[in-house]
Amino acid sequence: MATFLVAHGAWSAAWAWKKMRPRLRERGHELLTPTYTGLGERAHLARPEVGLNTHIEDLLAVLAMEDLRELILVGHSYGGMVATSVADRAAERIAQLVYLDAFVPRDGQSLFDLQSTEVRASMREAARRAGEGWRIPPNPPPPDTSPEDIVWVTPRRFMHPLKAFEQVVRLGGAVDRLPRTYIYCTRSSPGDVFGQFAHRARSEPGWRYLEIDASHNPHITVPDALAAMLDAIATSA
Image (tube, rainbow, N blue to C red; front, top):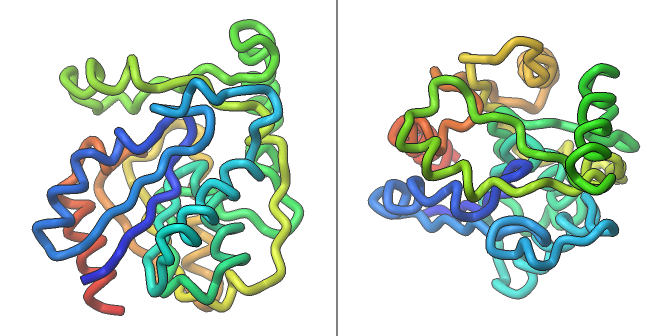
């Protein structure tokens, strides 16, 4: 049995991984999906000073309080920023690191550093216009999201703190020594930002590269396929 810990994406929270819990449990695994400060059921804690460093501390606290060891850390989308720093600071607790269509920063990079100038400007303008200057409204779900899932996810996706996209990660190199897998979602959207990390995983040593026939949120749109893939990663370790 493996223990999976998820660093979820932007605008998301624990609820978004609800479909995955029974599927991984059926395969004998445990799935932990803590919610970052200021999102989901913790939205009442949102404030301008919440940022990437807050979310990193959120997950480090879960590792310590639950005394988690030999776990598989999964970073989805923005969660790759969180997972990278958590893995670097607590590498002794982590068996392997899985990036699910996620950002993979290097030392000194922010999420905005990994985006285009146009995307950065658009998000900052959206925060100014609709988020009181410090929160970014949600991106729309992928177009292949079912009508039922649209109804489910829309009221639960809250604005994300701008500071989380602006703060940089500080890495000491421990994360690069961990077993790492990149799962690339092949139904990419126009202007696909994650292709750069798929290329990195294919070309750099120390990576295992996988693809899934899904858009950006396979834990919502194709949970059976994702559960099978995560199970295979756990059992092949």
